[in-house]
Length: 231
Image (cartoon, rainbow, N blue to C red):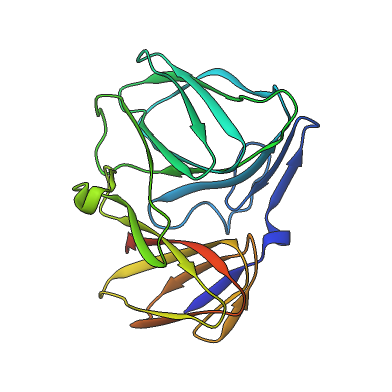
């Protein structure tokens, strides 16, 4: 089964300084049909005005991933980290037993565009931790998250992987899906088809009970591919 989550059908909140699109129920957006997908709880696409951001606030027992598409994030947390995350980098934080953090646009005049992704961990009470990394630009799949931090990926406390795929126009990637696994594909940019179903920038796919996926780029494209447990 391949279900297209059309970008324009997501929840939407415009707070003036923040323009946010919610793939799943979040804050004031609620849809009983979109409460998450497997271990994915939040996929928000945010555009934040210069000098604006999220002040110090708490989290607990959640893996929080940020992928910066343009601009720079200024991060500060209760673990003592104060970092900047420029475009192209990934940041992950285990909230675990509890952490407070703030995320601001480091620029006063250039908008910040990012994905904020929350992943439910497979265990509670993790000691809070923070990591960020820039990955080399490569064609094809590139491992970003894994439970054992293999191949230089960032560690995530969940039975899942995240790969970033860059595809040139006309290029096809094929993925064999293991039994009892679910796949979420988020289109970061460009146009693709998945087993013939077309999608464009900011669309998503929820996929289950498919043994093989053929991902074809109909323009230069980038996707995030989450390989997730069945429950």
